[in-house]
Amino acid sequence: MVTLDLKAVTTPVGILRLLAVVLTCITFSLVASVGYTTETFWTYCMFTWCFCFCVTILIIVLELTSLSAKLPISWNDFTTAFAMLAGLMVLVASIVYPRFYACQTCGRQIGASVTSWLCYIVYLTEVILTRAKPGEISGFLSTVPGLLKVLEAFVACVIFICLDYTGYYVFAGLKWCVAVYSICFIFAILVIILTICRLLTRFPAPFDKVLIVCNVLAVLMYITAAVIWPLYSFRNNPRPSLCDLPNVFCGWDLLVVITVMTYLNLIAYIVDTVYSFRLVFFVSRTAE
Image (tube, rainbow, N blue to C red; front, top):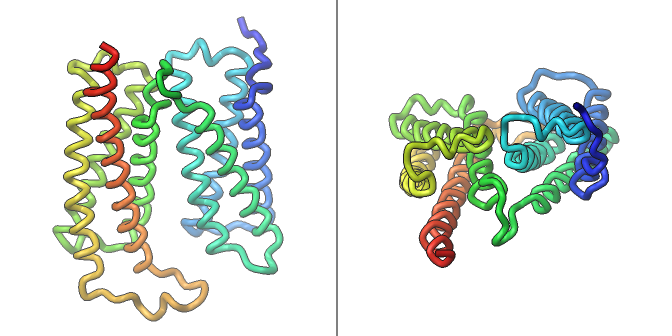
């Protein structure tokens, strides 16, 4: 039977989710009132706010009706992973939208940018509140390595979005970099799915050891990408003068974005590896 659980909307996390619903609704309403366009960045921003609005409402309803406890998934892992993903998506939208669509006299666009930043703060606060504390028993995605897996997957998605404008297929070295991004992305997604679906216990090998090995391989692969991508992308390829003109889309800048995202993911994988290594070989032995 369905029973109402008012804690879903009265706890600090529940209140934050209600705020996220209100802020995302205000944001995409303001943007929609300005007009519609088919540009990629506008579509991404609008999708982000609508997606976060719908999923956050779904989470509130499922927890309010206690149906979340009946789902065959790890609910805490799912909500924590979503809060992390939503925060990252809204962060990018909060940077991209005012960069391309706001101006000094654009009141509704400025208002949407402000509410989008507030929404990012709300999701970030939710991640902080739901993150596993030291010594606390919780799901994998609530821990630092789990949150890093969400970050790694999201950064790879940003790279994939930018790849369409780069002509990476011209050079074999850049194709290798795309292979690195794809392989590591698939592994991160598999970890997230296995965790949420509670399938880690059925893994045929010690999952924590496998995770460390894959993280080390990912670090090594990303090191090669961090060297090869800027080498092939910027060699004999200066920034075009057209990129200095206002309101002009510059594909060259996306090469810089991919380079920055590559180094960001490299740092994330290094931290992930160190943290996982510490948990497995130091904390676990101390507990024994």
